[in-house]
Image (tube, rainbow, N blue to C red; front, side, top):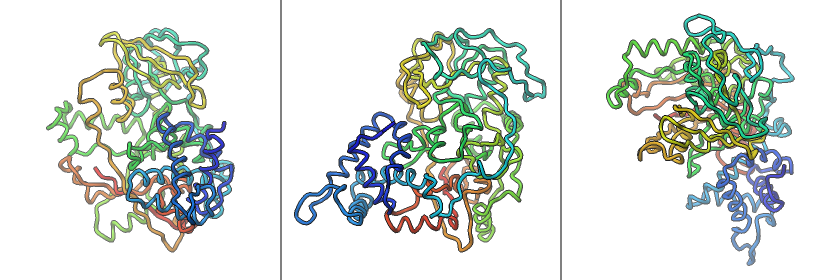
Length: 524
C-alpha cells in the first residue's frame, strides 16, 4: 500500500537522502509506510503540510526560488541543517520528525547493516529453542497452570459465557458483523495492570471481559526487525510523542500491552514512594501488606536477580564507571526464564523466555473463563454508572477500521489503558471530574553516549541490567532525583534517530555503532 502521494514520496526521499547523507531509494519510502499508516489522522495531515513546507520553503538561491527536490545533494543537506538548527521551534520539530522517519527507513533495512557493523537478527542464524506457551485463542484447549497459592486453575468456578464472546482471545479482525457482549465487568487494556485485574476477577468467579486496542501476537510473530516490530507492538509505531514532539513515548499496543516489548526489568516500588502515597493520597496498604502483594507479583513474574555473567559490555561499562566514582548501583531483577541474551527484548521475545502478561496473568484469566477481544480500540464509554456501554471500533490486521464495532454492556468498567490513553478515554467519554488528565507526569530521559576503542555491541545481551541509584532521592522521601541506566534499544534504526546531527557527519558517527555505549538519565 502506498502511504505517500507521488509528490510526497518524491519530497520525502529527497529529504531522507540529505538527512542520512546517502541516496535514499524507493525501498526507504516503502520501509516507512507502515509507520505512516499508523499515524493519527491529525499527525498524518501535519506530515503532508511539513513535506510541502520543506519542498517550497527553500530560500532564494542564485536569484531565483527553487524547490528542495531541485537542489544538489550538498545544498539539500545544508538547507535541512538550517531547519534542524533554526531558532523557530516549529522548524526544529519538523526536521526532527523527518529525521526519525528517514533514519528508521534507511538503517532499518538489511542493505544498510554492513556499513554500520550490524549483523542483524539471530532468527535464521542462531538455533535457540522456543519455550512452549499456552494457546489463548478462543476455541483452543483451556490452559491449566498454577496460581499464586500453588493450586491449579482448571476452569473451576468459571462464570457463564458472556453473550457474543467465548472464553479466550477473539481477534476483532475476524468479526463478520457487529458484536454485542454482556459481562459483569469490562476491563479496558490487557497490559500489566489490566491483565492482573482480569486474572483476579476471573479467578474470583466474576464474569469479566477485556478489550484491547491492539492485536494478539505470539513468539512466531516476533521477527527481531525494527521495521516490522515497531508498528506491530507500539502505539503509533513507536513514534508517539508529546504535542511538541520533544519527548518520545514508547507505549505498547497489543494483547499484553507494554509487557510485550519491555526490557524485563523488575523494579519494586521504593519505600519513599509508598510513604509519599500514604501521606498525600491515603494509600491504604500497610508496609507488611504491600510487601506481601509485591512478593506475590514477583513470584508470578518469576522475577530473580540478573546473573552477573549475563551483564553485557554496555551495562558493564556503566557499572565500572559507577564503581570508579563510588556511586551506588544495583544489578536489577528480571522476569526472564533461561534467557538466551539475544538482546531483542524491546522487539518482543521470539523464544518465550520473558514472562510477560501473555505468559503469566492472561493464561490464568483465560483458564478461569475470561474473554478477551483484541483489535478493538475503545471509542467511548456510554451510559450511567451501573449500566455502562463500552463502544469499540474493530480493526483489521493493518490497524485499519473494518467498519464493524463491538459494544460491551457491563455495570462495572475498569480502565487500564495506560497513563496517556486512560485519561484521554475518560475525557472524551465525559467520565470523571475536571482533574482528569491534569495529573500526568512523564519521566523524560536524556541520552548519554560514548565511543569506546574496543567493540561494545550494545544491542546484544540483556538490556538495562545495571541501575545507578546514587542520585535517586525519591527512594528515601518520594521526591526528585534520577536514575542512570543503559539504553534499552541499540539497533541501527532507533540508534540513528537519536544520534545527533545529519548528513555526512551523521553517517560517519553511525559507522562507530559497534563501539558505541549509551545510557539514559531518567528523571523522576
